[in-house]
Image (cartoon, rainbow, N blue to C red; front, side, top):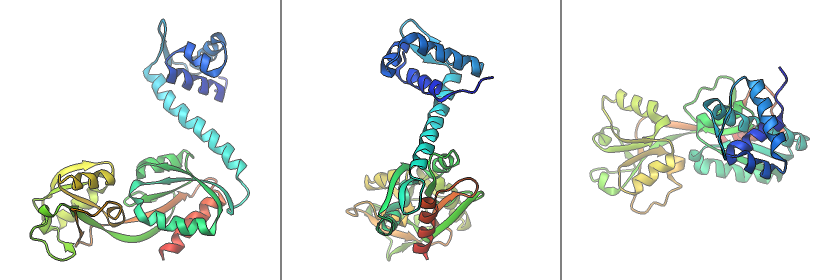
Length: 293
């Protein structure tokens, strides 16, 4: 079996995205016969049919759909390696491929101000996603280090943790008529419609279980910002980390720290222990740890 080359993968992604050999050939600036030949060679090497040829269009098979997403990642990784070599010399300058979560809030921004001041030659290529997405991209070499949030599996990672922060209850005053002070107990949240980020399911469930209370879960979702938006719309009480709660305007909302040792989370800066890690990435994670002390 001959090795698959990057040109074949790139041609395949262009055909997939344009949905036509004719349109793909025009975009690539080549004639259609050599393009078709390259795709046929790719199918022969893979041993599967990747595209269904119609009269005027090409449609991905199930195997083709799988390869398309893998090919995009492979081509991205190849581009990342090229960029890394261009910016190889030191931690004083270069491009840092950084993954960040939406709930990093002001914690990351405050740190970045100090880091960029101390490293004026560093530039950033930022990929945003949830913690699990960023761990997968880091595994595949698409990002070099990431700012993620507990809980996650730290195995195989170099981790530097930020300060522990409480989970806040954020909602319209109508949901807090009997509450006083700056904290709210889990008992006081009983029967209230709760909105929270799906990754906090284990934290929230354990906290309520330890208090002998069954929570009224109104909505679970995949983004802390969505929780805040729903809370602002009066749909219920958002349970979000303290740092992200500060990013939303506070008009018509009350913010109460949940009074429980179980409802805490941490931001962490991480990179893979095995494999190459640039000086820039190491310095970034180390600096994050120094600031967090």
